[in-house]
Length: 112
Length: 115
Image 1 (cartoon, chains in turn brown, yellow):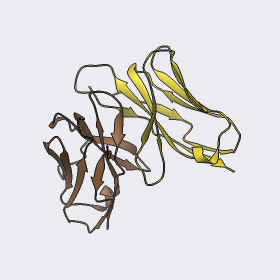
Image 2: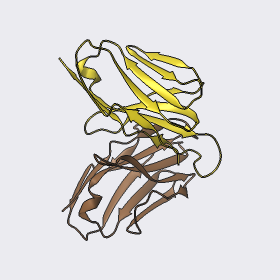
Image 3: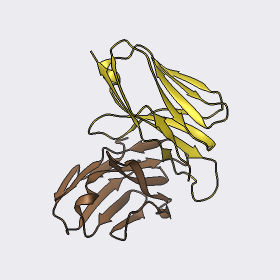
Image 4: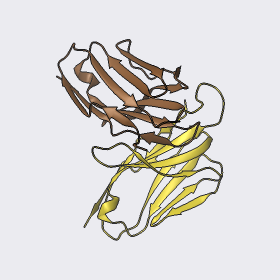
């Protein structure tokens, strides 16, 4: 299996622009998680899905953030409009039931 | 909200030394996972401990789950430069509610092993 795939790996954008991060989970996994990692706050869970349905989005910082999972093999995290404080590494992870999570390589986002 | 306190935050040691990283909580967890993350990569699962008092060994790494399933430790024997990285513990809550499936991560321990 290719593992969790994320794109792009790096994104540099200007403040106010829309940013879309993409994730392809491991085939057969029924949970998908979006995390944000910064030096100051560590690894934070933003939202997670079970069978494509959002279960808990309490970690989404603001209405500027939205996430979708239109099917079992694809999810997006969108930030609109982006702000410099959104700069971080964003990880997608997937798991089978409540078992171990497998992380993607992350997207390093820089908002100038 | 379940919290995991991880200590120490930073650890800088010489090759060959032993070290222990601790992960503590006031909450009971269904299981506890340890991950290692290298720069530019996502966290990679090392081990999952499920039973209170359980001890698991992975070469020079020894993981222990507390009897009450509230805490865990990671011990590395004879550390090597290749052990350098960020170590994260993560707890899975007891089944039920909106926390089902949601891991709580500790803040992490940055380990540097000097040759």
